[in-house]
Length: 431
Ligand code: CMC
Image (cartoon, rainbow, N blue to C red; front, side, top):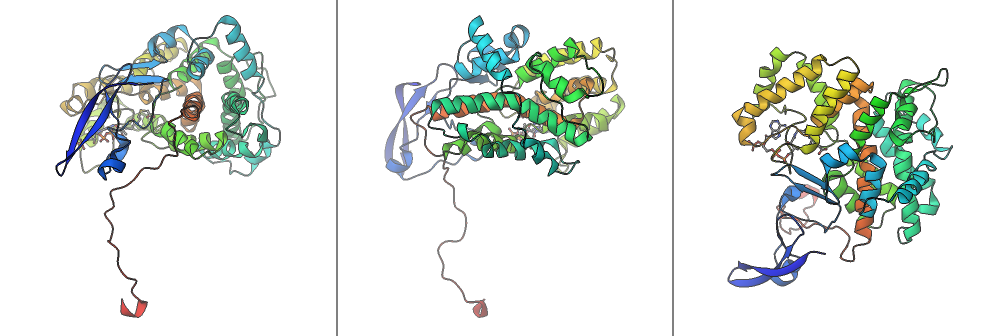
């Protein structure tokens, strides 16, 4: 709970209102305007929520100026190096790192929920083979509400817990099935003897006709990508999940809403768009042409994987991924990959260009992730589904936190109305 020590005074038309100022554990103070409309008869106007805190949260903290990202207080760099995805899931959901026994129990529970209701397989057949896997995922995750009736009651903590476990466990299975369906290959069932990341690679890349060996280097890289995408406080998709959940919608419907929002190219869809852009640039000598286009106000082109609403410094996730891209491509013997060369040179040039420097535009998480995923064998269409399955734990943790918050109300923003004032209906013959 934030503490309150001071007040801010707002004067409108000579009338003064005292507004409490809340102090977070870290980060800027927050003016509490909840009573503003009732006492001052005014709204605030903040499209894009650039200055608005929509909730209290104890899960993730970002300092955009310094480029810090903390999950439950732990720096992302330390978690990326020393932890692993399922431990990070436990941390995000429960607030503390698990003991050995707690970890074993959590892993066992997730592993036992990886299979899908067999009838869900038939859903996939309703989609065209060339559907984007994100389209399939939005549909199938939403449809989970029609299968798991015993975990829909949001007022029952044990049902909330089971729904959370089911989604963390089953999203990789759904994403892998969406991929297999697009290839026309048989679905591959999960293997409970593999860890979370290795099992996902197995479901994506193995076929029943021959044995498949999961490369531990790729499994570690996959786990790292999952970890770096696990949560990112109140971004667009997380806010969508919270808003959907605020009406009492069931957990599967809320996560499907989050997946839909993540798909956009300004958000999770940027990883696909970024790799497509790097491929389109193709060679280092064409970079200046694209830099010029990104700066041209008459051209809608933007440098994908650059810029962030909150980070006005390096996205710490991009730093970890840049090194991981070098390591993974090096270990796979493709370190001289042309796309990686274009990415590094593009980053170097952009970071020296006054346009990008003045606007504080730095590489974000999507800049290097696509290069790694491509090297691992994923097509671009799978990049955003991988982001979605990694972020599921963040969405669920935020949704559960919201339901436990006694200040939580249905999300209902107001507006600055600029339409016609009240007027009388005009019969068609008089128009
Ligand atoms: N290339 C060129 N110019 C840019 C870019 C870019 N990538 N990003 C921002 N700008 C310019 C923009 O034109 C604007 O200029 P001006 O002030 O002259 O009008 C200024 O920088 C501020 O941009 P904004 O759009 O007002 O900033 P925002 O906070 O609303 O947008 C963003 C943030 C991430 C949507 C935006 O930077 C962007 O579109 N980036 C490319 C897409 C991308 O990489 N998205 C992934 C974000 S991180 C992962 C995630 O969220 O899922």
